[in-house]
Image 1 (cartoon, rainbow, N blue to C red):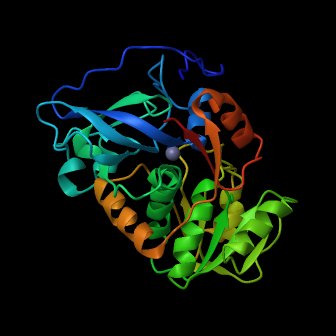
Image 2: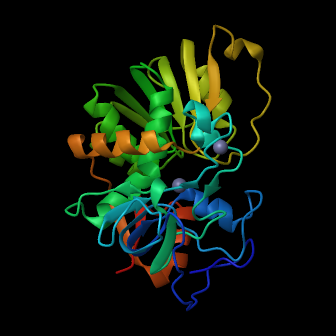
Image 3: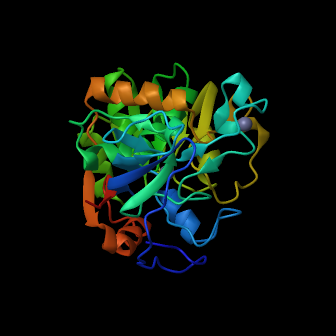
Length: 324
Ligand SMILES: [Zn+2]
Ligand SMILES: [Zn+2]
């Protein structure tokens, strides 16, 4: 399924399977989860999208061919995520911050992704997966889970954590945070009682609309909704020294706000991409804590329907395309 231009639906196309070179592998895709970033790509909200482009960056599949330098073998079960490759020697790559590499390329953005039967990936950036891990349950961990994990990690040792936007990332990371003994306060679109009930079901101690005040001041707030207005809203509910962490790749403008709500050593920070260390740490934790994403499956050829359902907020959990 291919995007040819911004603000247009995906088109189904037949192409020959690509041939891996160097460290690349050819993956037979089993499942690919749908991310809000795919909507930002569709809407032309990100710079430098490489059209025509196959989106998708939460891929579970099996290696069917390998380039001569690939660190994987035919038959290996792997996950491919957003980080496609990095330069390996810039100041960021050299200091454990490959997520910030200026020359990084991302699946489903500059590199073709997993809304496809076959996909190329640099084998050095794939995550080995156990053959017993079900594809549709594992795919959402590869972005929603991973970016959610990095976002949660940025909250440091916060105990009372607000989450704004209770979608794919939030429902996965809530399970991990509750397992770690943290208190989750879930803020949804006002009036979205289904999402609020879903949050409580997953262990949130409180759930309500983003227009309501939290029942107590919070140590940190994680924002997954691409809505800049939520930044000052979240700041107002933070304790001194607290932190707002923005987990999305795109956000509408943040409105001006009075300095006094930032005062008291409150902080705002963003989360960009992921490192391979995040991926390996999180996949291990996810297996240990038995994180179980709530999924809605679609056939690959119904990817446009999946994108529409995500856009309209009709999905509780994560949409996953099943491929083979
Ligand atoms: Zn994503
Ligand atoms: Zn680099």
